[in-house]
Image (cartoon, rainbow, N blue to C red; front, side, top):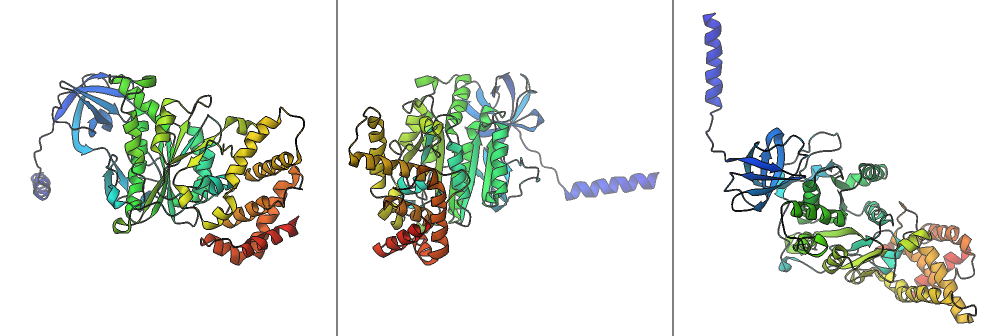
Length: 497
């Protein structure tokens, strides 16, 4: 027995000597009250703003209000088991998220915990979710286009890499569909995509992830999820975490696309947290700093100069309107922050015109400078003539007699609108789009029946790929479309009629 005890104590002594214990001071506090998604804590007089706090059961919270006698905490986990009197500890670190290449292809929550059942995310680096935007001197102008694969957007509302383009419209008008199609179109374009779902239904998120996986887009994407069942705190920090993940790749010299779906839900989550923590409400009960909340987020999207890697971060925030009220508080805030907006009309959606992009209300303030030369030669007058057609169509309903010129304008406009229709999950290459637009603007389709336009478009696209491969390569490379090139496309299109 003595020998066994001696061996045991000798093993314990060797273990203790090889792993010395250090005494550390730990600052602890006490929960005084718990609300929906928030808690109040006292006893942590040295806690910092946005510092992570740890509650029983390894639950996390973030210091939000630093008042004189207590701290208002945003809870990042569900607080069903949390009660007044529970102990809370400081972690001495601000809210951060893991970054690195191992995140590509994964589905994570805003603090980096895996949600896809593939085990923990193995990364070597973590970065704070809140970071300052790149200084102006570190930036370059937006010069390279980000192709969405959607004809009406690439031709009339182009987006550049490093731009912030708002997608705005009522519920169920196809906002997410445009963002997902843009992600799908980045295949083989060396663009890393980050889809940030904020407050969406679990079924909708699962469908989006399944669509990305089925079409191979998850191989170059990261999905950050704060579903509708998660705490308001998780929904609040989700877009900042997604941006931090994207900034890591941008600083490596890569091009990144971030989709925020959507920032209206994000604003509501922030309003809920702010009102629960007694922050004074302003317009439409949103706190006054809601503009700063989104501006400091979207300002991080940019195109860095070559001295700082030359990468870019393109933002596609999504905002929801109610009854087409674009002048509501959050949509107007986001419109003033971003470099343009793509407005989706419920009227067009109900008529079956998909994507339901209202060209007259949509604008891109930066992307026009990045647009490929072939587009400029084709779509120069297309936007103006299409907007005029929409107004003329509205007025023509009140008149039974139309002159020939007006009737021809209406017929051309209806065919352009039909050509701009595009099914979801079918993004098109630049050359295919140019071929269809050239055939449309040259009048080749004016004599065709509306019902045959879709099949004719497919034939024109196939003819372009099969018979004009050299021209396709030159268009993709950004070369101008000469008169000879246009004639080649017209001749090839005419053979398909």
